[in-house]
Amino acid sequence: MRISTSMMYNTATAQMGNLQSSLDRTMQQINTNRRVLTPSDDPVASARALVVAQSQSMNTQFATNRQNAKSSLSHVDLALGSVTSLIQDVQTLATGAGNGSLNNADRSKMATELEGRLSDLLALANTADGSGGYLFAGFRTGSAPYSQTATGATYNGDEGQRQLQVASGRQIDVSVAGSAVFNSGMTGNGTFVTASASSNAGSVAISAGSVADASKLTGHSYQIDFVDAANYTVTDKKTGLFVPDATPIAYASGTPITVDGMKFEISGAPVAGNSLTIDKSQSESIFTTVTNLIGLLRAPADDASSKAALTAGLATAQKNLVSNFDNVLTARSTAGASLKEIDYLDSAGSDLDLQYTTTLAGLQDVDLLKAISSMAQQKLTLEAAQKSFTTMSGLSLFNFISG
Image 1 (cartoon, one colour):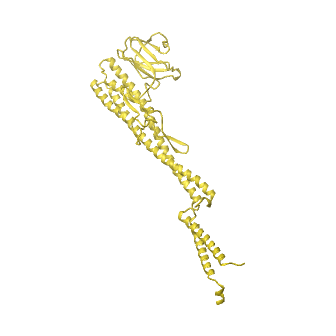
Image 2 (cartoon, rainbow, N blue to C red):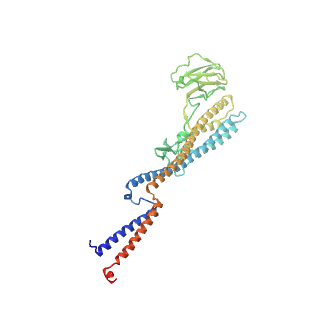
Image 3 (cartoon, helix red, strand yellow):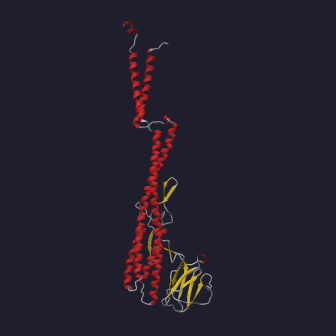
């Protein structure tokens, strides 16, 4: 076979170019710590690595969402903690107002103090979330959720609860609608509410009562009328019928009375014409409860009738405060449970991120020991090829003859 000079040069150049390219690729693998530099190097590994990298990116975003959720829920928990303390202060004042040694001026001073507590409650209900919105406004975060009125406060937000996706298939509430925290207290005992007519003379009073038999509850309103100081009748206001019949019932102060599954007590000294009512419990905001309590403490209590009204009003306020307090505790415990869940999800997310990193390393990373060994071998091969080409390119027939 005849080998021309140009063919020898071309073949040698191509071979050394291939060796140099292989060496450069190995060096690039070592420098980047990547075995797969282009998808064509390992199509299967490249496709799997793309899926894993996308999953890892989503996991990173979930971690960011969890931090944002934790920040929002921490604001909620802090605000609700302050609300809890304020309601406890109001309960303490309401309990103190029942002290028989206090006069009208003393109770008026307490009412003034309660006005400050009411302002504080409104300020907490309008707490900002730190990003230009309001914590308890639902989806209407652009404006303050509460504005004060003569009877309490008006809620300007909605029932929405903002959510963030904190893990695959898991969304978590990061806000609480103000209506669920401040507007959902139930009057009375939560099922029915008792009251004395404001026009009553004497000192008759009715307890808050309790449910004796839930199966007998009708949800109707009732009125108790004293025929005289010793007898009364009970009327179902919806049906207009006497319960159990029109025969007057003998009155005994402090004796438990049961009407259609409701149990309560009447005490004091009634007079003919006195009336008491039993109605279905309704929702009442904490602001209305405190406003009513302020009005109650400012009203004079100089005679038996007004003192009985004060005692009944304080009992009603305490019941309503307990109901509102329970709502705040429920909302705070929910926020606390969500914060604890986020901590668990953070731990799981960190483990998952480590798993993704390990998987990607197995698919993409180069074996440094093997790559360095291969680089040394390729470098030696290239140097040998270069020396061989140098030697062969210097050979000539004239050199042989002259030799």
